[in-house]
Image (cartoon, rainbow, N blue to C red; front, side, top):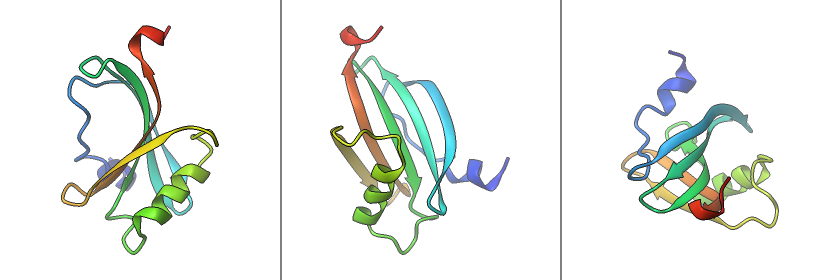
Length: 104
């Protein structure tokens, strides 16, 4: 296991979430975790970028959101929602939320 793998061992997926795609990528000196999820309990597919708050110590939430937006994964006009879990140690961002009925 590499240090980047260790960063994401404690992430919490939404209830019933199934990972369709996942990879780590460089995020301006940090490590981002990209995931595409199918979440039947919520009736959606969603894309997510997670950042370790431990790795990003010293950067505030707005700075981290700006990095996520600049990553190239999130379209300029996309709606973005986020959840900061300081106790768990992660900033979760969600975008491209599509109802399951509208997915191929």
